[in-house]
Image (cartoon, rainbow, N blue to C red):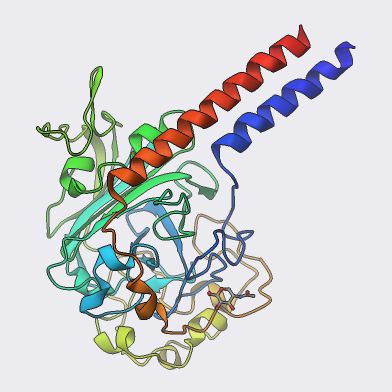
Length: 383
Ligand SMILES: *[C@@H]1O[C@H](CO)[C@@H](O)[C@H](O)[C@H]1NC(C)=O
C-alpha cells in the first residue's frame, strides 16, 4: 500500500508542472514550430542570416541579447499589425537569427536580478524594420489565444546557469526604444513578467536606464511587480493610472563602449532577399555571406565575427556560454518566403489588450484550482 505513495506524489508533481507550462525546450530540441499558426521557426541552427525566420530570442548578457521585430520593412509593419509574426533580432551571431546592425542601438542597459534579466535601451529601430514613428507594442508568450505574440516565440537565457527557456517574458518595441525582461521560472515569474499592461510602454513596465550613448551591465534588485502597489493592483483602463514604480536599485555596473557584431547598417541587407545567406549553412567566409559590407570589427562585443562563428564548426562551443552546439542539422534554416506581409492584415488588434490579459488570468486561475484539487485528492489518496 505505502509503496504507491511516491508514485502518487510523482503524478501530482507532474500534474502541477503540466498545468503550468505545456512544454520546455532548449534551442537544440525545440520543434520547427512550437505553436500552431506559427509563421517562423524555433529550429534556427547557428550563425546568423538577415532573412532568418527564427523566433528564438536570447537574453543572456549585454552583448548577447535579442528583441522581437518585424520580418519585413514597410509602413504596414507597425508592431500592431505584425505582433503575431515578429522574428528575433540579436546582438550576437550564433543563434541562427537576424543581427541587429551595429549602431542601430545607441544605448543599452542590462540588469540581472535574482528573478529576471532585463535590457532597456534606445536607438534607431527602423533598422530592424519598425516603421518610423511607430510607438510599437508589447510582445509576450500569451497572446489572445495563448500561443504568444509572436505565435511560437521562445525566450532563452544562460544568465541563471545553463541555457534555459524562460517561460515568462515581456518585450516592448517601438521605433526608438525597446525593453525586454525574461523571468527565471518560479512562483514570482508571472507577476514580475506581467504582460497585461500592454499600452503602458517601457518606462512604466520596466523602469530603468534608457539613456543614449552608454552601455552597461549591472546587478540589480527585482523591484515591485508592475501594476502592483502594496495590496492594490492597477488594471489598465481604470480611470487613474498610478506612477511607475521607481527603478530598482543597481550595483556592480560594468560599462561597455558599445555592442555589436560586425553587421553594418545597410538597408540592402534587410530589403533584399539575398541568396540564403551562407552564414547559417556553414560558410566561414565573411565576404560571401552577405551583400552588405561587413566592417572590420571595431566593436567591443564578444570578439565573435558575425558569420564565421558557430556555423563553421559544429564541434566546439560557439561562444554562447560554453554550451556546445553539436545538434545535427538535418536541414538548413528555412528559406524566407516573403509572405509575411500579406498575413499582417489579419491581425487588427494592437497588442491583444485587456482581453488578452483577462483571458490568460482566467485560465491561470483555472490551472491553479485544478492543481489545488489534485493536491487535495492526492492527499486523500495518500491518507
Ligand atoms: C519549418 O518552418 C519553416 C518556417 O515556416 C518552413 O519554411 C520549413 O519548411 C519548416 N521545416 C520543416 C522541416 O517543416
